[in-house]
Image (cartoon, rainbow, N blue to C red; front, side, top):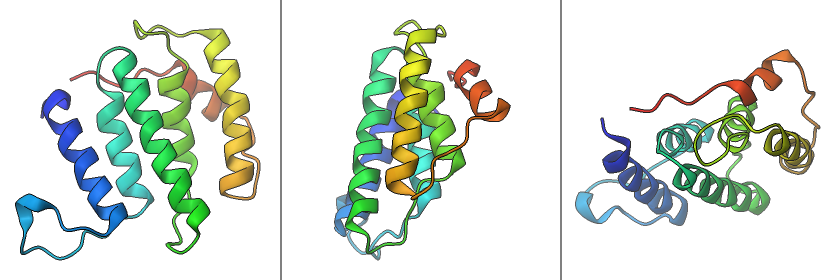
Amino acid sequence: SDPQTASPIAEKLLDHAISGDKYDEFKNSPRIEFNIGTFNTVMEICASLDGSDSKERVNSILSSLEAVVLEGNRGIRPNRKTFKLLLSVNSKDDSGRFCCQEATVWMDRIRQLSSTLINQELKADADLYSAALQTIPRR
């Protein structure tokens, strides 16, 4: 499906899941349950958008994830895939090309985030570094 269409819907569903509200268009549906896979999927959809909008939306989801984790009552924690998505999206300039300066800044940020959110600093290895070079497929 088209990320321009799917992204706002996915983000809205995630917001409703986090807040505990029912999604308006599904009035009779039960509360949406979510886990780290839900966050990662919405991040992937937003990451496939073009330009800086991609970064802004993925980082907005990161902020929501941080709040949920720091709230501490849902048992949700980012995983390696979460950090690789963040590094992949944020290591690019607005035209989608790799930017060494951005990658370095975000590698440090990911170390800090992993220490704070999973109580363990994520070790940089070839797999993590290669995430910075990967491009999220544009649809």
